[in-house]
Image 1 (cartoon, one colour):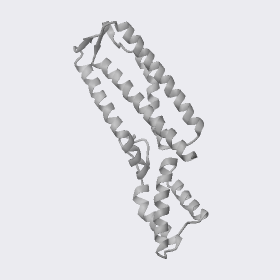
Image 2 (image 1 turned 120 degrees about the vertical axis):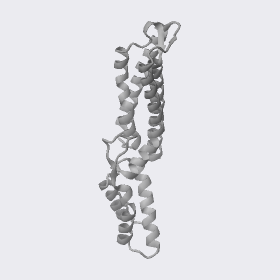
Image 3 (image 1 turned 90 degrees about the horizontal axis):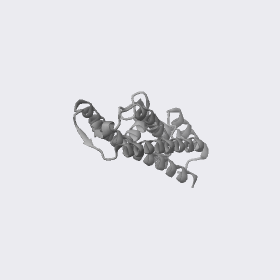
Image 4 (image 1 turned 90 degrees about the vertical axis):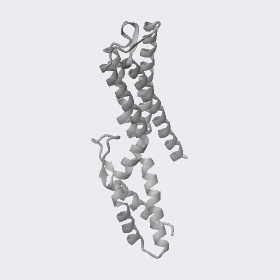
Length: 215
């Protein structure tokens, strides 16, 4: 049995009340919710009872929780947290590995690789970081101008924008000191590559959803 516009709006309002704000996730949950209600109504269950049954069924998934991968400071419905965690965790594992390399670089400061033309390499790395930082700023401005709240926007804000402090960090670092690269220097380059690659992935996902939503 097909639901009326008013009934669909009631379900949407309920999801919003439960903290489902991101459009990409809201569409997914709404589809599950409506399908479940319609299936029940086909079995001669009223909309009110079917709606109540669906709310009880989804209650554990809409209970607020948090995750280490998304940051314990951000409490959201469990379904949202699981979606976010699935998307970011593999990138986080890369960051953890680089952090371990960074710690080893501090401990094993005798490990060094001679870098030919180190001043040129340093200039290239500085240029790369400035360029990618500018690209991230432009990408975020574009995201804001579109005014569409997605889970990808949240990820961009919480896990990508911190990269903008990287140029300041580089100015105060001893990157390629004395023409040699140690584990600390290598970890800096790897961190930049991983974050920028992830930023491109997140930005593309956000754009794909907007295009699909408009279509």
